[in-house]
Structure formats: C-alpha cells, structure tokens
Length: 377
Image 1 (cartoon, rainbow, N blue to C red):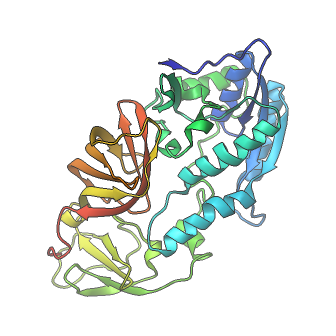
Image 2 (image 1 turned 90 degrees about the horizontal axis):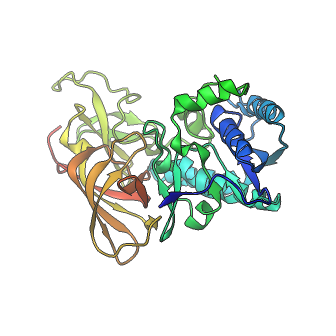
C-alpha cells in the first residue's frame, strides 16, 4: 500500500483546503502549494451566534484570511450553519433528551466537513478537498484506507471513522506523516502568522464554554432521583441528559451517614424511572463493562462476516484495547473486550483497528457491566 500522492497531475489540479484559522490547516495548504497544486482556501462557519462571547469565528476568519494572504491563495467563505443544525445539532439534542451522551464531532466530520464542504469544493472546480487532520489515507488493493497518523498523540482517525469511503477517496490529509512539533516549526519558517496559535479544544461548536449551561439553553430540566444501586435516595438530578457515565463532579451529594468518604460517580441511568444510579469509588465494578452492542456498523474496510480479533477504542484518548468484534446479521456488531473497560457510554462510538488501519465504527447502544446492578454500593 502507498500513501495517496501529494503531487497533482501536470494540469495543476485544484485542491480546496478547509482553512480554519489554525496552524494545522495553514500548513496543509502550504505543503500542497509547494507540491504544485492549484490551492484555494475555504473558511466554513458552522455555528452562528452574534452575541455569543465564546464564539471565535470572527477571529478565526481573520486568521484564515491572513494565512491566505501570506500564501497568495484565494479564500472562499461559506456558512453551513443550517446544515449543521439539521444534520448534527438536532441529533445531539435528541440523544441528550434520551439520556445518552453523543459525540457531535464525528457527525460534523461526516456531514459537514466531508459532506457539505466537500460538495462545495467540487462546485469550486476542485478535484480534491484537503484538511489539517492528523490521519493518513493509504491506497490499497481494496481502495482507500484510513490509517492512524504518525503522531500518535494527535491522531484523529477516531473522529473520522464515519466518513464514507467514497468521500475519503477525494480527500488529502498532508499532515498524516508529520509530528505536531514539526508542523509548528514549518509554519514558523514559512512566516505563517498562526504558527504559535493555541489548538482549539472542546466540542466543535461548544468550544470552551461551560457545557451544562450551554445545554440548558436547549433542554428543559427534568429532575429525578439520585439513588444507590440498592435504591437509597441521595438527592435530585437536573435531568439524565446533563450527566455522563463515570462523571464525578456536579452531583452535589456530599458526605452521607453510613457511607465511606470516597467520591460518588455516575454508574447507570434508569430512563424508565428518570433515575440516576451512583456508586462510590473510581474502581467500583459497576463502572466497568466487558461487552457492548453497537448500532449499524460503518465499515472502512471490506465488511467482515466472521468474528475477528482487533483493537477497539470507546473514547478518543483511550489506548487501543484488545477485543473480539462479532458482526451481526442485521449489520450491528457485538464487541467483547479482553479486559473490563471503564465508563463505556451509550451514545459514544466504538471504533475498531487492525494495526494502524481503522476498520470503522458505530454508536454504542448498550453495555454489559462487569457487576450486576444489584451490587452493593
């Protein structure tokens, strides 16, 4: 297998680079220009709130424009806010209403960056669309493969697993072979004005703002009981959608007679009773799961019919976990881990790998705890 070619054909094929105003997309554009591509930039707005103190879109656009000026490339601007609300944000709210914990960054990549923006790039006459993601696209006998980036600490293949292979075949990710430090150094040498700009963090549209306060603007509070697994009432929660499995803060339980001084953690949600189940101790057995069931599996490799040994991540920063993935006849999958996993959360994603290659992934639908719900608190 070989990395998808960075150099265009003799006709100087056009590539549209998603310029976010950050250093990664800026260096992606720089490298493609140096490789001989006809490079143009596209700044996309996905979340528009003029009175939002946490919105950095205006500054990000100015930074993207400064990069485009330095590189001598055109910069287009497009708003995908309507598509984002319809295809990503509505799902985000629906999942939270159901008491689950979604990851909108995955849908943002599939529906917006490599959906709406890629289509926009085609209309601008581009043969490829490029981003500053840390991942590698490798051409093999069965088509394009999504592989981990060289910089393991920055690898973003987890967030890209839901993108369709037909779209990935039209994409370039020039940073896949580079370390983050090398990217900043390259930007500095080229005089790009964003060479020392801090990386953005947080959920794609929420950013650094307080998450619960933001969510409360869209979801009404639906108070319910907080209980131990044995049914002892410990207080009241604001609504299941405001909490995630494994969460420690924000429970407002405090010390309780008859219980140890260990902190309390969210262990389960009983949607039928609108009840939050909590346990004490970070390593409580109810916080661990041995198996999980997924929704329809999205394959980034030829679909498998038989069980296979692989590694699986159930969250972005997690190390690869040995597991057996068993495809189901209905297109879903069952995953059994070699070791119990902490705080596996319905609504999040399970993503599978064979070595560096991402096999695909799916939404986690249900988990099997390592201890029965009736275990002592």
